[in-house]
Image (cartoon, rainbow, N blue to C red):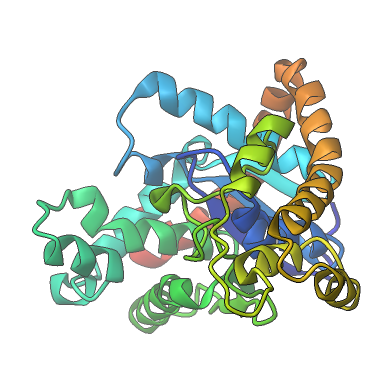
Amino acid sequence: MSSKYKKTLLSGVKPTGKPHIGNYFGAMKQLVEQEDSYRGFVFIADYHALTTLQNAKELRQNIIDIALDYLAIGLDPEKTVIFKQSDVPEVTELAWIFNCITTVPYLQRAHAYKDAIAKGKEVSVGTFEYPMLMAADILMYDADVVPVGQDQKQHVEYARDTAEKFNRIFGDTFKLPEPLILENVAVVPGIDGQKMSKSYNNTIGLFAEPEEIQKAVMGIVTDSSSGVPENVLAIHKLFRPEAELTALYEANKGKYKVLKEALLADIEVFIAPLREKRKKLVSDEKAVLKILAEGAEKARVVAQEKMKVVREKVGVN
């Protein structure tokens, strides 16, 4: 994978559950589409997951599942380095160094921390220091861009602030990353009209079986006074051009069952090949593990070179 003429893109995903179509259209799809434009690093954030998931068996399976998911949607390990965060120990070393130049009041501004406190939760140290591990993930590979939604922009801002502070104290070392905010990606609605989210239990699985898709689609809330089921249409726009849908929905005003069946058919046409590709990958788990191992080797080469510079700068080598 040549990086001579490419900027670097980095993205991380926590292995904490099955993806849904909102995850795909909101983020996963863009990683595949950007493969020829950037040198890509996509890591499975298993250490980040430990702040909320403390079940070894479940975490191990989730790690494999996330790798399968990304390979099934078309991420190419020849173009994108796919690896586990925990396979690059230099990242946690760098996070510790960042901790040492970061103040408590600064970390108290983090959205996740403030939300947890507002809900009366007792916050773990891992959750509190989460932004520094994320900054290490981003800065280690000299990422130029980090694809994020508008609500995740703060993650990149923390990385930029940390890079600037380190550079000011120890000398120019880290590149300042930019958020790659995908403005044209609307919030994908769930079957209840709210944002599609596992926490709302309103999702349509990205690799769902036909009967699961049918249950979800037929359960879409269809309150409407215009004869057009807005929630059905909003999801349908992800799968078919709006011009086609305008004619379809105009011809079937008030016929919610007919429109849901049309959406169901379109979703199945989209999901079926992804589902079948994932099933084939599942049958060869060793190949998936090999991809993760090879990705870790590539990522560590970059990380080890970066840490030589960092250790020299801070005076511990």
